[in-house]
Length: 368
Image (cartoon, rainbow, N blue to C red; front, side, top):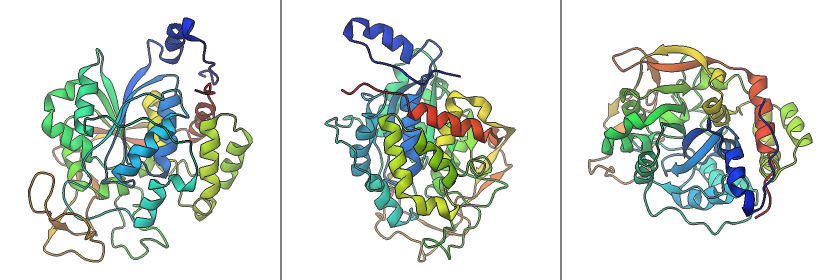
């Protein structure tokens, strides 16, 4: 087990402290997030994990959170962690194509951190956009970097398009997204009850075009999909256990989020989606699976229906007319086809994952 407590020392031993925080074996990570509810704890995991060196955070407006809110919330949460000063940036505000989006109440929750107050940070986002920050951070490293994605793959697809020469700089891309044997999670009672799509997963669904490009890329991808995350359901019992062990500010924040979302936990629909993906970055044995090619389904249609987000611009980032797609099939991930094989995570160790989250969020940070 890794240690769960670090104490900041004064400047005369700051160098020694950095060695403790980022040992020689630390995994260098860039985190791409849409800042939905599960992303917050996942970000605190990668920002606190003693075996991870967080290089930066990128986001976009195509997922749950909007860019403006994400750029406020990211530094606020980082200030609760061991990595308060990493650069962060936002990218494109919409999916590469299509008109699908998360339900607006979910987006409001993402933008407001579920109503949980966090001391505001004065830090500002990078002057670079997300794609340029990705490229800069990768180019500055003398060893390969892990990309962790916990939202739509919009930024990654645009980065691959602009900087394909960067691919050798990435050792792994660990993504939370997709699903194969597990049912989809688009249909959520009270929000999308009558949605026609029964197989897709939200992160892929909101930008299936981007996801398909990433699966074609040849990157060493590990898919932490619904087949795996369904094994880490958040229960009221776990929330009570977490509350009983709260010590640090990061854990206190997450405890308040769980309190505010007790209805979500009671619904049986809440899982540690992004948290598990974050833990897989430093603990690859939490992803046991097999290598298979994956492709993403999307079928063009002439007109949109009730699931069309009419607020999206009619032109895409590339300057092409934005198209409509069949919501019943958009974003479904399939095994097969001609894409390079990726690792599909099938089995994990739920108790280890639950224990690690408590330990990592309770690493103590000296007040700054």
